[in-house]
Length: 299
Image 1 (cartoon, rainbow, N blue to C red):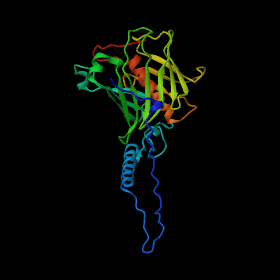
Image 2: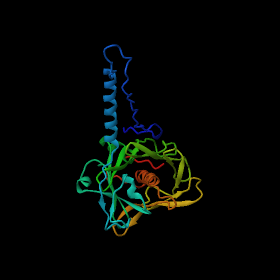
Image 3: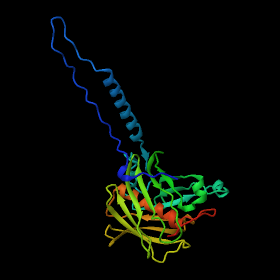
Image 4: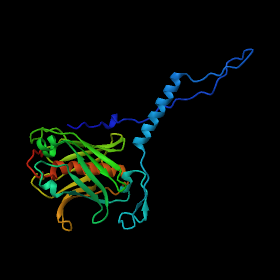
């Protein structure tokens, strides 16, 4: 079973710097001055602090690699050097999520780890997503399995990742409420929580400060056998629709995919990453049909 991280308890990679005092001279005697040198204990503390600083830099440093964007639809720039992987989401109004399937996956006797492509509609691909889950959970839990979904950008570096724990229960409203956590490297930026409702699918999207930024509601008549569905993205008070997450047929790609229309009033890539996390949660809860038989919960 996958272990998820808690946003509120996400690790704070800060390092306490040891202040080195200037050399201090003792009172002179008749023959010489004595210079106080750092003790061996101080030297060990200094070395330990330097190692911690180096380790923190190795985990948090992103390589600045320029990417040619001459043929891109999402930007007029000829070259982009993203400070963070999610910066590729700036200026993006709509995004497609398409599952990629290889021949070896179709012939496998067990459910394989899923892979996805996140792209601008009929344009460039921004991220490639790869699931990491255990074979036992894929066999026993089906779409309810826990996993880590990592998304890589054009520099082949990790842009963000999603964490979901396995859920169990019968297909009724007493099932455990679903949730998903959204991370950029070394930092939790939000979470998605299913809200109890007996009438329609309902979710709340939280930012890194645990404040509700969006709500998502699905159709009241939605059934697990339906292949197309519309989920609205609403303001935090639930009164105004700002965007949508749709599962629909793409006539160009000749397949079903997820279409995200981001809220246009806010271009913050962190909020867009949280919406992407919600789309993947809906994918596994409602849209995902395993190639082999597996358990599934539609509550």
